[in-house]
Image (tube, rainbow, N blue to C red; front, side):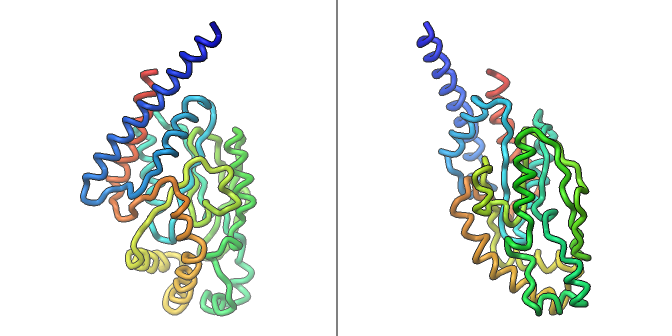
Amino acid sequence: MNEKIAFCDLRTDISFVARVLDNIRKVILYDSEQKQPLILKLNEGFIFNLARKALLEKDSSFLISVTGESASGKTTLVQNTVKACLKSDTKNYTVVCCDDYYKDASRELKEAGSYENLFATGFSFDTPDAIDLELMKEHLIDLKNGKEIKSPQYDFITCESKKNSIIKKPAKIILNEGLYVLDKNLLDIVDVKVFVFTPFQVIKDRWFSRAISRGKTGKAAEMQFNDVNQTAYRYIRPTMNIADVVINGLTTSEYIEEITGMLIEAILKVVKSG
């Protein structure tokens, strides 16, 4: 009798996963037919494993880590994914930004007197060492284990890190966004690895526009962008090879929200039907 029940449960599991996969394939097909599709690459094996986890570990959280080069569109993707979550029944989410974990460099900036002088010393904001990845990992693990955290908050103009500034609550979906969220020391806790791909010239134009709002102009901006490009080549671009999903950074905010909403509903439809 127990063997018969186990076999029935197995058939139910397989049916659930198959229906999730079928629904997701329909969304991917629709997306692929668009002039500017959102999804450039998707590992179907990863989708299968994700669907299995959703079924077998109903109370577990999903850590979705979104990376890409500076100004590639990571934040835009996360913000519009959040909008899609809010429109669905998936309101249980939290966002952790890698940028908040920059180490305090306010003293170094004051001593240098300017960003230009600071960069002339070889200081870099764009290597893993500039970010407290150890603390971020500790916080992500706490969130996955159902614990509330207080993340730091970073000021991009003064380079000051304010500790224990932002309360983050545990959630079903944890969105972790930033340059080094797919660092090798974080991969063991990540459930979904996302890379946002954007052509170099678009990144460059976006980056310089944003640099002004962060107090960097002229030679200081040029010096940092050269460093950004070099470190991206060394640390960021290779992570595209390990991503479960590669996203097109040229799509509009509205279309990101549309497709992520469709993907969420593709899963929820099966969950609701049982």
